[in-house]
Image (cartoon, rainbow, N blue to C red; front, side):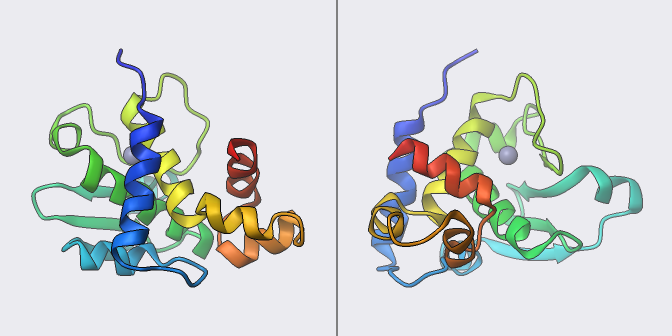
Length: 161
Ligand SMILES: [Zn+2]
């Protein structure tokens, strides 16, 4: 299995933020997706699917489907994660290897594309430059609400700085 290219995932997230001159927080990945021509649709999956899936990207339709019942932080992260597939992983998104984003992140043998998408999402929503600015003056709790992500995402980005 090929190794994830985190450098590229981080660079692409930074490129998008720069391209759209996004400076205000929290970052709205839905607006970025729409600007990229990707439609974000909130859906009510059937009961079984809803328990398992956060969201998915339909390559052919250029649509990101998000599970409507998720808490708002999770919706945001799901959109950012699926946007990564739209931008970085055309071949993967079209293939049978592609996986919908699970609700539970406890996963063994995640394909490298899934790991890259998580890193892209974290860098898009919690840009390292913005985190550097606030990390010494705000608590994890405050940062998590400032960036509208879970505390786990903030902590992971802290480790990366
Ligand atoms: Zn994914």
